[in-house]
Amino acid sequence: MFLGTIERQLDSKRRIVLPAEFRASVGPLEGLFCFSGFEFDCLEGGGPDLLKRYDTLIDELPFGDPLRTALETNVRGGFARLSWDPAGRVTLPEPLCDQFGLTDWVSVVGLGERFQIWSKAAYAAHREGQRLAARDGLAALRLSQRGARLAANS
Image: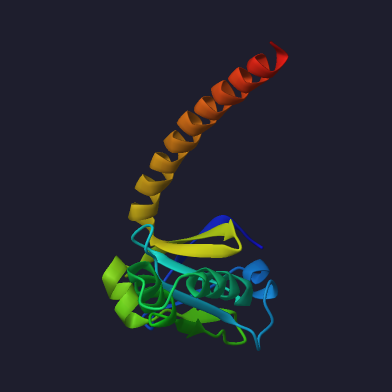
C-alpha cells in the first residue's frame, strides 16, 4: 500500500526519491507506472494491482464506448513505466511534468493502491479542499446513518 505524504525536490533530470515503502510495495521487475491523472491535475501512479483494476474497469465497457476509449487513451496510452536506480530515484516523464507544472518541489501522496504526484502548491490547495469535503461528507453520512437507525427502530 502507498500511504502518507512526502515532499521531495525534483533534480535537473526530473528525478525524485520515492519512499522506500512505495518501492517495497512492488517488486523491481513489476515496477511502478504513472499516467496523467484525470480526477485532478496531477500524476497518478501505482503498481500492477492498480493497472489490473483499470484493465478490469476498461474491459467491462463495450468496445467503442466513449468512456472506454477515454480510459484506454489516458491509462493505457498515457502509461509510463517508472524504474528506480540503486538510490531509489525515479525519473518522471518530461511531458507529464510540463503538463502539471512539476518543476521544483512536489508532493507525493499515498492513497492506498495508488499514489499521486502534485506540485507542492497545487497539493496544498487540493488538500484543504479535500479536508473540507471529508468533513462535510462525514457529517452528512452520520446524519444519514442516524436516520436509518431511527427508522429501523420505529
